[in-house]
Image (cartoon, rainbow, N blue to C red):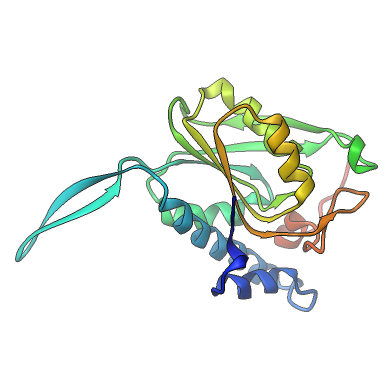
Length: 217
């Protein structure tokens, strides 16, 4: 498991602004900071992909370097994941992309919350490296549900689960419920979930902060 804020970098400034009540009312800045963290996380993940040697011709000679064999497939959970996803797409600019629509079908205590996926579009995933992008890894149920639905599009070689903020309960749920090769990348591992399944200290509702409050059915 990779945790970005356990080393000093500019990422900690972006993360602090996402959490700060005095900054959160600026939706554009909130989205930009999510995008920045996506780009930084994409760079970290890029270091563990498969590479091959390639020679290129310059005006003055030859240059040999290692480049990724393939860009990973990027999948994000809408709507909160879109700004974070854009940061990954800025780095993996030739990647195929997919989108998952999920929602809490029940509310209440965190043990009672159920997640339903209503929409999935994705390319062929067989044997590919996939980055599954969601800013908040809370209960872990939406990510596990997304992975189970993804299998209809093929079984990936490896899934990189990328989150801005994660809760220990969500990490444990994924550990106990995923039967596919995966790794977890997060900017911060927070303390716990409250009884409504929100991450503490967290930052609140990432989707509402990025795009405005939604009208519940």
